[in-house]
Amino acid sequence: MKQIYITLLSALMLSVTACEEYTDITPKGSLVIETAAQFYEMVSLPNRGYPINNFQYLSDDQWMREANVIGRTPNIDILNFTFDESVDRVSLLTGSSFYNQAYTYINRWNTIITLVDNSKGDENVKQLAKAEAKIYRAYDHFLLINTYAKGYDPQTASTDGGICIMDKFDLEAQPSKSTVAQVYAFIQKDIEEALPYLQEKPLDVYHPSLAFAYAFKAKVHLFKREIAQAQAAAEKSLSYNNQIFDLVAYNAQGGPTALAVPAANNVEVLSYMYMTGYNEMNFAQSYIISPELRNLFGTNDARFNLFFNSTSTTNLDQGSNTAYWATQYTRFFYPTVGMKTTEVYLMLAECYARENKFTEAVGVLNTLRAKRILSGTVNVSVPTTRKETMELVVNERRKELLLGFNRFFDLKRLNTESEYAKTLTRVFPIVNKTVPQKTYTLQPGSRLYIIPFPLSVLQKNPKLTLNTDEKVPF
Image (tube, rainbow, N blue to C red; front, side):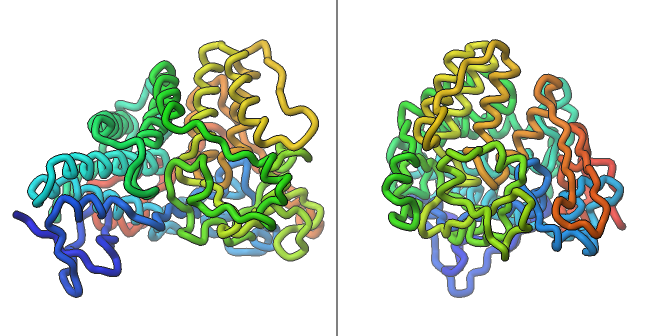
């Protein structure tokens, strides 16, 4: 039987250059993993982090302070914020913690999937460990394909360049890049193979539940425009967990200053993942929302009123009509890169809207809004067109699925449909009068929406080529 040696501190958090080769597992100070129960325990990985800094400002929801842009040497943040397509970004993206961490997690899941069958112990535990690892492997591939490739387009997915699929534990692996269609097929295969063995109530919150798995299945179908399947999966997920945390009641209780709601106490959380680790959203100046999103919230939305600061003279440009997330993660956990029940409701609403069931779509939105809107108009009226109904859904997604990668991913997928594509415009600066104000524009088909692979990975793997027309500096 094969044994795995895993350092106690890292628990297989390997320093892997994904899509190039796996790194040796260091046996020093190690623990022998040889039973099914130990492999199952490996699935539970608190503090999974997915940094968004490579693409944070490529959306209409986030903003930068003027002093961090004006007079500064352009870095990747400034290029993204000003929608600058004139620079080849590869030399600026020498490495990527998002890329490395996602593939490091995939390496962990592959270790379990490949080796658990030869371990000692109960066959049911082996099946469960493998299924949980597969659903997480699929999730990490989904994040990577939606970052480094074009949004899924049924007309071009079979030829659009994708990412490397890492489907086995192999220290010598050097896989080639697959197409977008091939990656999505791999993701869906993993999901379908995992579902029969997952549990409604797993051992702890770091193991995937059936509610999460069906929510993720719905998301993949939605991104592929497989609407009937997305709706069915969303409904199945809500059959396991349909709870919405009541922010209106929470506001009446005094909000985060009076009552802390850590991650484990938020009933709508389906998966515990973070942008930055346990200190999720604890860097206020990094999470400034745009004037457009602030205006979208209005004055009576608990999601804004409870958690954002719009008056700071330290973290904001006064007069810019921006705001920043001002609530410590220990006071309230608001999922940003994991999934939660409210995203499932919003996916269901989108399915209804796309099927011209406008009343049903708005009914779902109003169910959510009843737990979010503090006063005034809670229930929105039913539009007469699909485009108007979709706009309501998309706007609600912007307010509910804050600050992580959801808006960036949404723009990419919706930009593949002419009916919903959006040209972003950013007028900057707003406050500073010493430099000319400009209007920056990001077209739906811009190459900026496809993040280049990190330079360090491109240098080590000649099989990996860019999915944009940018030049590699070697």
